[in-house]
Amino acid sequence: MELPSGRQRDGSLLAMKPQISNLVREPETCLVAADVSPHDAIPHQRARKFRELCALPPSPGGEGRGEGERFLQSHFRSKRLITQNPKSEIRNPKSMRASLRRLLRFRSSSHHQIQRLQSAPGKPACSYFLLSKTVGLTAVFLAFVFFSGCRTSEAAVSNTAKPQRPNFVFILTDDQRFDSMGCAGNRLIRTPNLNRLAANGVRFRNHFVTTSICCVSRASIFTAQYERRHGIGDFKTPLTAAQWAETYPALLRAAGYRTGFIGKFGVGDAPYIRSKSADFDFFRGLPGQAGEWFIDPKDPSQTHATARFGNQALEFLDACTDAQPFCLSISFNAPHARDGKPREFQPDPRDEPLYAGGPIPVPKTASDEYFRLLPEFAQKSEGRRRWTKRFATPEMFQSTMRDYYRLVTGIDREVGRIVAKLAERGLADNTVIIFTSDNGWFAGERGLADKWLMYEESIRVPLIIFDPRAPKSKRGRIVDALTLNLDFAPTMLELAGVPVPAGMQGRSLAPLLNGTRPADWRTDFFYEHHYGPNIIPPSEGIRTERWAYLRWLAPNPESEELYDVQADPLEQRNLAADPAYAATLGSLRAQWRRTGPGLK
Figure 1 (cartoon, rainbow, N blue to C red):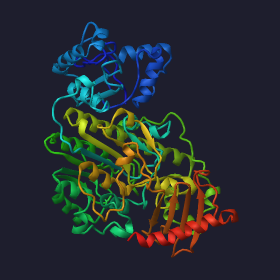
Figure 2 (spheres, one colour):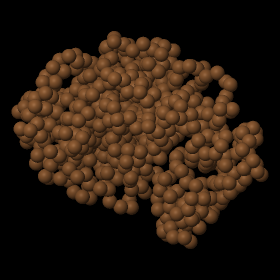
Figure 3 (cartoon, rainbow, N blue to C red):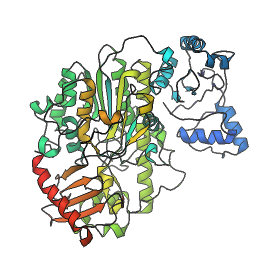
Figure 4 (cartoon, rainbow, N blue to C red):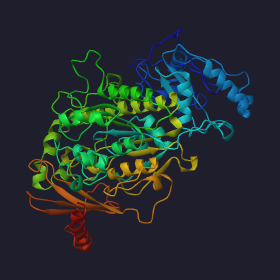
């Protein structure tokens, strides 16, 4: 993505803080959340920081002092449009609101607009960059307000009545690791919009799936049930009509919500999935992996699947109003591999330049030493076969990981577009956003690829929940309590005021969102995986806040593994044969035996 040089006559920029009012012309980027101040550093440092946060490629000529000046002069220009006395305006909310009205009446012919909103007395308490070629100035302002809790100040709260029931945007990715976000500590991956969502919402650090495979996990998300209760253990079995009636989309629709589904459905065969169009008000669900390709060679537009699903989300939101609450479920099929394709993790062309600057670190346990510790049947499993196609050489590892990161960054861009659309439509202050994934993913750990097995990289996934109605004191928090993919349906139903069916086995996350951990909150959960026993070793286990107990099952020889995940988070030392931990092993084994049957 090359930034065009020179000025464009049709470009305009408005800023809420008149000290900075710049136009950035980046035709390939739709929305970026960042935090760069023009007063923070000398020009070449600002240029570098802006490129990094906005996921732009490095400057071809380097970014020394002279290059930084040229970058800023070429890609920024100032224009004061709000007031001649910004300090007075900041002190006077009435004056500021008057200027806002003048600003919002202005319509720009620019293809791309960027706006920086800086915290100040009488102004919203955060700063936010929006770069968009499709969103007007009103949407830019409202998207900022979105992340401010939809309040500019106590005096400026709208008197317009809002519906009591919140809207929901449930965003599900496919095979995304728990650590594949900047807000989760990954310093390489570029996820500015997710970082902003987490900074203004709640991030759940210990969020897990109860079965690490697409079809089962998605059925569990719909029903809030373990596999052994909902009975979906393969890619063809559908939910019965009675089961569907007690899923979160069906219950919310019955309660008056407008419902939509986009992307990979993941439960049942193709005819069943096509029939689900009758169960949603807006349905763009797809069977299988939601397409053979990320970019279909037969598609003249060459639109990446991630962008296409994002476009469909905007289409749904364009028809929403605050007169009827809605629940939109968006199921991206990235970053799941297109198995068997020449480039399994094909990114959006806009993201091709990313992550080319240096090597991506290899995980500590991605070595033959840890591969040899696996049982023989696990060494011969499907996970190892796929490892040979993705990670067998250092070059393959780098290529795979760069594309994987590019796919995640592409999802992040669509999250930003959705946030902007909510703002544009005036829906921001009553829409809860949930971001998560159906299962984790091995990046070569233990000599494996994909997921399935009960190791941390496979079963632990991201979770961010943003509720704009929450007070500022409850935002930007990290929750350490154990949470599961079974918890989404009860959470949305409780927030919507809809009774939670007795058959649901998850729990509402509402107390945790409010900063309260119930005294009886779970301290462990049951894990199970039975699909494909001839190529994927069946396993079950118990995961507590401290211990991971893994039980390998028939048709393979039964054996056990035990890890102290607090002292050994990478699960490097199997304690099952250590006499010092015999009592712990026996206790967890007994818990495993009695827990499973009770979950049916």
